[in-house]
Image (cartoon, rainbow, N blue to C red; front, side):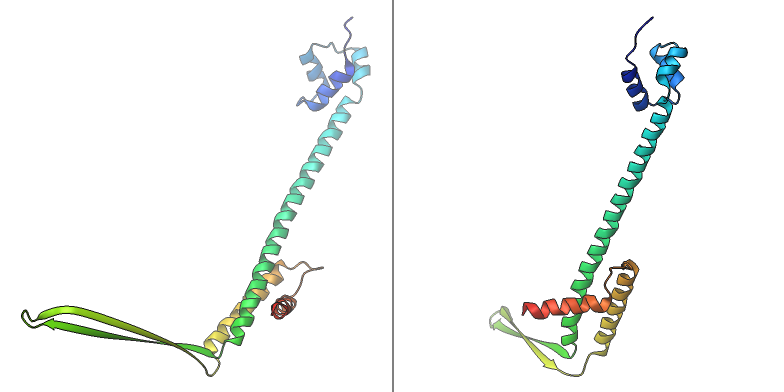
Length: 182
């Protein structure tokens, strides 16, 4: 009668891809008799438990990765929202400022008297940039309002019910940061 290392065989079976204990034992050349059944009792249950643990861990890891990905998206959106809020605050301050650019070109030609052709050509360009305050730009105001609505929609779609911050909170925080930096 051959002696087997039953603990080692059990370990191999649990870690193997075999569906049944009898197929595993047959492959290993172990005869299926009363003694074999005595030593192999519970192997199938242990293998099922190992597979259940493995599947649970796979599900947990998958959920963790998806959660990290969604959390990063929320962080990115909030960062963009804060940047946009700062830009909106700055644009709001500048709604009634207008910039005017004036360009003038002066061309001087010198003629050669003998050939009656242009001998030299000089072009002088001047650009004046002036800023003035006038009425509020309505088109700019509409664009700011639209940007605020879009920002609010994005934040509301990604906002976590328990600990998300509203658009007003994000703008207030960005404004306080901006004022604190000055």
